[in-house]
Length: 145
Image 1 (spheres, rainbow, N blue to C red):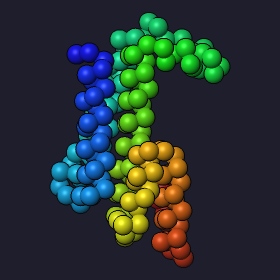
Image 2: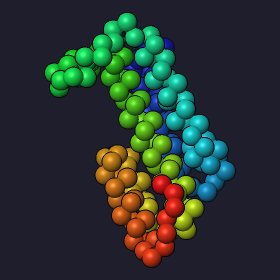
Image 3: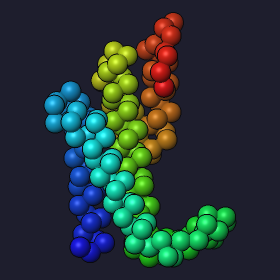
Image 4: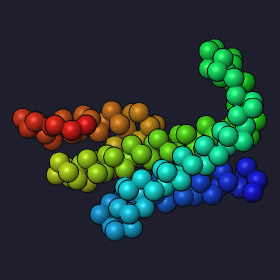
């Protein structure tokens, strides 16, 4: 399958997962497919497959300078790998936010902005969730990450 087609498919899957996290976080499908990590594992497996198929091009020095990193992203397969990396990690964080908020009894309405920011700006959404959680958990001991 062409790289562009895989890009479209994983984007659609990711978008659906984010919609489920935002509008139906307790639905059994959301829990089994998104919060369980199944889609993150799928994206991770695709990433690994692309890495293995392009590993002959891999050079550890590729990460040593900004110019070298920019050179990595000059072909479609490397860009797709980078995109899968973002999709997998951001979705992992989003699923964790929903699960953690549910464990701590934090209102889903309070975490929707965190999810939207995690979807669009990754670490910013995660940071906001830690702030929201600290506000909701003020005076309570949080013993898990």
